[in-house]
Image (cartoon, rainbow, N blue to C red; front, side, top):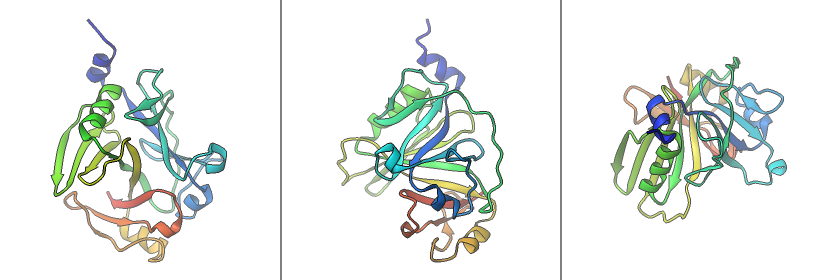
Length: 218
């Protein structure tokens, strides 16, 4: 007997087509990211879609995501605003920043088990592992084969009632070159990442992207 969810878990057809971010498209372009007229920043795999906070009447930051391959009546996953769309055809763009793809998106929650359970139920992509560091617990999903990593984070002192998007990490071809292009007033010094052999640098909040963004080596 099939219940739909079991089918998705077996086939792994869920995919994050884009993350919707309320912000200023010209600020994102100023980093060396190319965007279409409707605010889409094409990347390999999951794209970014920048919308005006005024037009959407929402605060700046990641405000939702668009998924394909899931139940088309879904409007929320673990409390995260969700739009169900058809899978996007590949869109190729050259970014002077050397951006390739989104490595992962971070979701903050007050209940790791509830949030990761909801993500698994909606997408059919089960929790891969849990990592514990001091007061922090992290759960990891990969949405679709080779798709976006969703890092769900719970802090012992954080009692938030709902899951919220917190930030994202973009993979670039050459981290040192990307940082040199942006300058130290817009990006921090590269340092070793948690992932062995990789390095990461954080875009400074003063840039005004509205959400936490870091660049990571391939």
